[in-house]
Amino acid sequence: MAPARLLIQNNMTLTAWVNGRFLPLAQATVHIEDRGFQFADGIYEVIACFGGVFLDLPAHLSRLQYSLDALQIPLPLPFPALTALLHEAYRRNPFDHAMLYIQITRGVAPRSHRIEQPLTPTMVITVRELPEPSEQQLAQGASAITRADIRWQRCDIKSIALLANVLGKQQAVQAGVDECFWRDDQDYMLEGCSSNALAVINGVLVTHPLGHQLLGGIARQMTLRLAARHAIACEERAWRLDETGLSECMMSSTTEAVMPVCHIDGQAIGNGKPGPISMMLRQWMLDEFSALRQQKEQS
Ligand SMILES: Cc1ncc(COP(=O)(O)O)c(C=O)c1O
Image (cartoon, rainbow, N blue to C red; front, side):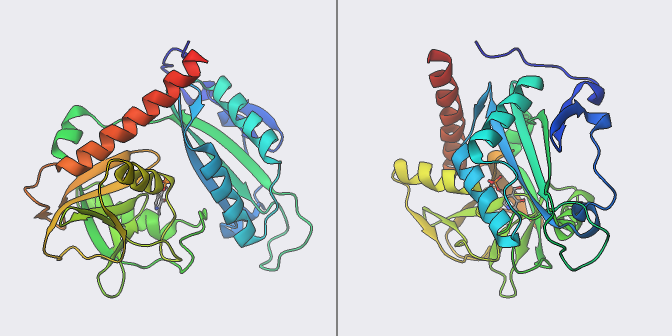
């Protein structure tokens, strides 16, 4: 049986993992000389969990390893122990639709740019309810602005250094929209502040190729997989908003699955309504979540 949906009104009841133990969220603290706090010297992952089933866990773990390797931070626990810990964190915070946040920093040391070896990494795990869009949000689709990319050149690392993304998202909020997409210096669309960006151009699902300019999103990968499975042609290539034949835009992320984006920089995309391919991809993704969950409930 799936656990009942929890209605947690007060953060005090949430439990977090911090450096070797579970604590009530308010007591789960780290040292002020943690290099994550001092230098954003760390990485993170966000994993969706539906009724206790983790979505694409191996892909998240392998991206976690990739990010750690890029910063030469050791994995604090082998994958089987980390997986067990994630399950335990969920068991203690059993939202029906949950997102698990893992943050690993290089550890605590007197503030110095130089990395004093060896350090013990700091690991934190929190669980929150996964937000769901309202019917109205879905019916009208999301909207976005675009901005010239001001981020560093290793956006493939899921680094906790997210200041540019925070500023971009804040500009989106101030403009009354949901996301800010980054453009490169030739106006090619890279990704959002917390999502990947995709478009339908002449019936082909198009998204920027992986590389140092964007994060290899797990939902992006799943979107491409689902499109291919349903015989929608896909192309990983640089694309621009002013291309002829562009009929739909969408964003993908673990927290929002696939969301149609119907207005960008104040202009309607297609007819300004969620397009058929975006909505099918969203539905196929939600169906996949339900199927995974059912498999677990029947096993
Ligand atoms: C910059 C950026 N791109 C893309 C994504 C989507 O990644 P995923 O699909 O793994 O959630 C995120 C998610 O937080 C992000 O921060």
